[in-house]
Image (tube, rainbow, N blue to C red):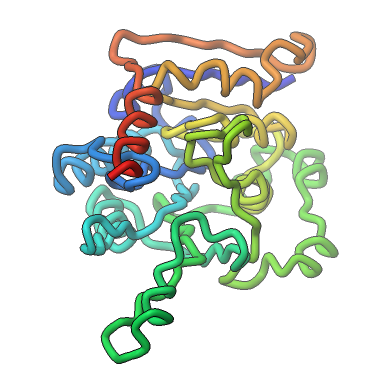
Length: 295
């Protein structure tokens, strides 16, 4: 039986979680004021980085020594200016105390480009300085808190959990997990989908990260839970989980995705806490997106 706790509140305060009790972090922070996801959510880029730093400090506190935090991130272009989100998050997390461990490129299929194709400008103006490439990738950046002791962890967990957590090498090789480029189809928040209006990453990403960086029965944290994908995958892979989400409007989406009603209490233990610092954002953001499209 695994436990799963969802806190509706600001992840800059994760006081419900004891120090050094989390074994893996898998998350995707909101993309700074992205026009089709989070328009005008943050008053400035500095305020956005302050959020990342404050959450990063809490992640460092709750994460067990030697374990890793994985961020799915992307640079964001707003009014023709490209903000170096990935590199700045790397710098912020290093300032907090993490070491920069790995960088994986998540490559999406060309046919799944979500925003209008920038490359079309060159087709209309076939001259130098009209080149604007279409983006089909995001970064998965991985940070580590101190050094991991393999022998000590094996002794603590026991041989049975080690055997149960063994990675399927055939799958690992067939799907080329060993590369620094992962080809995974993205989730488009199309009308009628559960994730409509929500920037959600595909289940395959947390599935790989949880398999590669945690053991069965350990605990995974997502401080920016969104639609609940990390929790859903943690349940399927027999891990415990904590999730923080500031937007109360996502509660029904999260419950549906993780099967909150259908799950038998004998198999999974759920707890949902709503704090006073939670807010409502989804309707506000969707109205902002619509108004920008009408311009």
